[in-house]
Length: 144
Image (cartoon, rainbow, N blue to C red):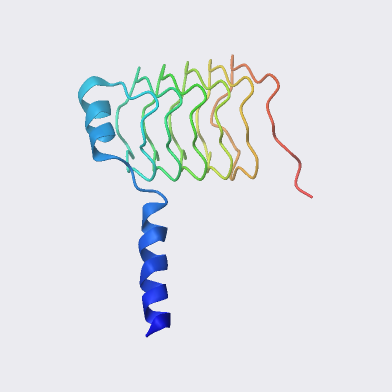
């Protein structure tokens, strides 16, 4: 019985790891702005979020596959474990974004400022476009 209780408790806490705040999601969709918001684990795949302000937002584990994120402010946002495959991040502010463990397959970063971003253990770092992007002082440790 103790084992079953422990399993149930652990399952509950595991679900809470990437649980976004509904009010933050509604604010983003209504106003296009949610700085400092908790959008962890949210599914925004194939959404048009062009020009959104998500500075310092928590997007850990978020699904942003194929999302249009042109001219978005994501400065100092937390995108650990997020799926950004085939997303369009052209002309965006990506300064000091944490892309650790994120999937960046064919993400388009053309014209974006990626200064100081962290790519630790990022997966599929095979960008669709980087022309004009600023990669300055990024943290991209080599695999051992």
